[in-house]
Image (tube, rainbow, N blue to C red):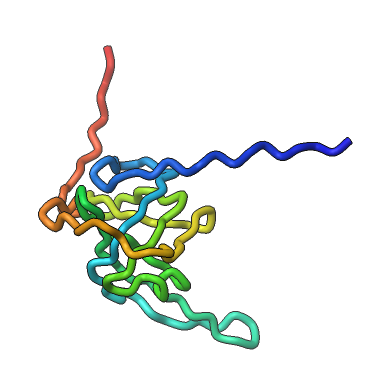
Length: 138
């Protein structure tokens, strides 16, 4: 008997202003506004040196902007002015502010066509500081 694979669901694209702390599984189409290399170092793993690169990239769409933490191969795709598709992205909290990241379970792809929107630069979600509050129920 041949088992039929379940049909793949079409992705549901999220807008930047819908992102909330502690959420994951987001698929977004964003424009890269700026890129800043934060860490670049090599470490010896066996006979060859393994590079570790981390860059903070300001990405956004027509609803807002957020800082995206690009790691290793992702850094090469994050060039200013390019449009990328972030699949299975998650929100990491860093010093009380939101950062967007794609781990090994997600993908960063360059978009086949440039974005038709302009980035809303006055709504930066990474500038909003959040505080974890424990609620005690009676």
